[in-house]
Image (cartoon, rainbow, N blue to C red; front, side, top):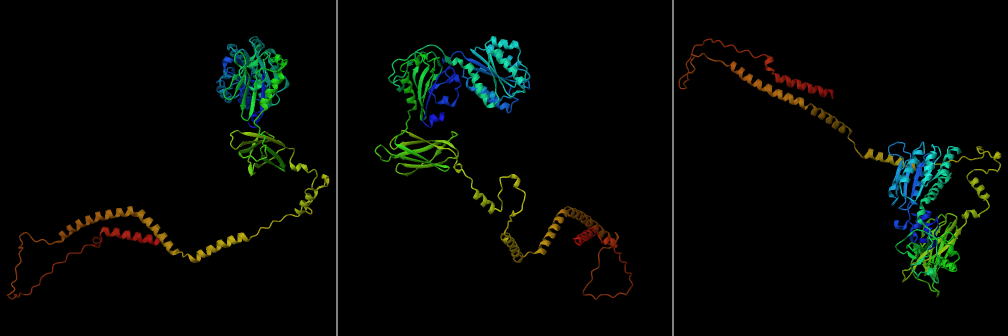
Length: 608
């Protein structure tokens, strides 16, 4: 409905009544956004507020928690900001109590909607405590209308008769909704609660019905939005086309409270308190009119006998239905199979083509989904576009365009009906095609008698054979072998050298691991060398001949010019040579260490 007005340029006229506008649950709906009045008026325009408590026990129905949140949200959204609402559900943990959201003014609905989103319903054993909590909270508030809605499968223990009598005496009505009962007897307790408190009982067999039931029951506390008092409407905007030729207005007996809306909304008639009675506005491409009183005998009895009533309502409908539809564009819609072609021709009254600066089209499909269609110019003042009509039904084409030199946006509408898909137009089968398919594929035709059809009989059925050429895989294999052959022939690999390098690398690694041992040997060698040097000097000193202390130390000097005197030969005794040291003394300790080192090295080389 909203899209029809704003996008397609349609007109909407809404009238009031006890179950219309704000009192009928339209607050917060998409339609409320396009109306010229505020369905949720300020507090100063409202009568005493109402209070609503929801007792939620829908955990045993399929997806019960999800449905519980959905129906509770639907009931709360239909309330005004000054109404009071609370939610009670069983808490199996015992930590948070039974109140999901304590009774409080709804306000902007953010707080209570957050509580609904966090609600987890438990399987309550008894409704006594829940209803007692609701009773205590409602008795303590100052609401004019007090109502309780209970949803359950009827299995919990029913409230006592005393508590139900107290609710009735306090003016608290209780309506019950039965869902997925264990048996028909389970619903008797819910019926009893509704009867003893003046409420109503519902047996919802389809979960989709629950939101509508809760919205309907929430309207019980919406009665403060109804003002019933005889008054005469006052003209606020006398230049309105709706009042053209109207002289004098008869009285009304009531109306639904609403508030003025800012923007393009225009109040034409108001009550003595300044509340809107007749208001108009431009909503998108369409127009809306709201008459907050009723057009029946309850509030509008005097208007039914008013002689100018037909002219008044004719002007209201004409103004709402009047739109900026252009008369200088023709739309031709042609169905071509699964496609629909749109042809637009813009011609003025003199037959000349018009120059359009903006042209676009929007199609509303049978499922009310919008689809934009691009139009391209194919000639002077001529445009063409296509869209797919995949589903049967009616398609509404809305053309919007703007003329050159004008900022005003015009529109033109056309419709086309696609009754069924094109393939349904052929009412006969194509037996030759089926026979040809069976013949080409090697199959067979089956008869209508299933006893004569042997589905698993393969006689006469050719088993298909698939041949895969080996050319490509053989070429790939040959290419790999060719590359290996070239590599073997052209790349020289020194295997022996590589082996030697590997052996040397391992030997160097072992030598590096043995370096600490060689270091210790070098240190020991130096120490022994120092010791042997000291001992050798002492040994040499011990081997030297020492004369007696009183021996003559001077030797006679021979004279060269004198002949050497001759002496008689005398036999002298050659002194005995000192004995050479033992072989063990000649082979020092350091030499033994070196020999041991050399032998160890030779042994390692032999092992390698």
